[in-house]
Image 1: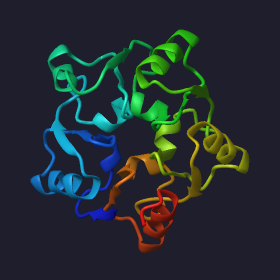
Image 2: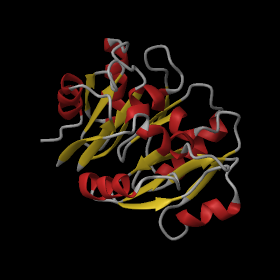
Image 3: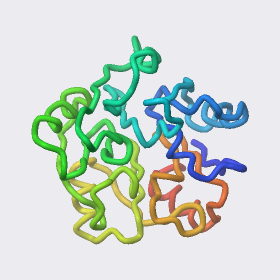
Image 4: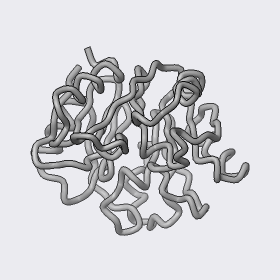
Length: 218
């Protein structure tokens, strides 16, 4: 298992999303970053935009079973998922799936603003129980947390009740932390799976230790 600081890159979680075997990232990703993804996470990276945007990590939420993708995605962009993962497009106004969905292979917590029909679609494609909840008073739960099948890290603003929800739904332990020298939106600065993690360049050694503990990277 490996925890690496990605030199020269800060908000890596905004541009990249990964599960246990695949990663989707912006077409302008540096070759060194793609190599780090392969080595640290043991995944094969694929380049794509979503809705013409490079913020792939903000617009896609996925686990080993499927992917929820912004409903604004174009058909040629969706071809990168074909044969690799089932996809559901979110027509909801809350279509930034990566920001609004926190998911692993055991469960998902989603923005409480989703209607029940959208929750059912998310549940069907991700093949896990889906629960509506805010974390630290924030509805965009994917932006303030990062989880894998082994652990979870979340904003230092999270309450004990928030941690209990994460533990019950995602079935992992949780560690509070920041990333990139004090940023509370930890999802913006981490790309991770159960095999490893990459963190933004400004992440301090203390933060790296908390992330390593929270994601059980040892």
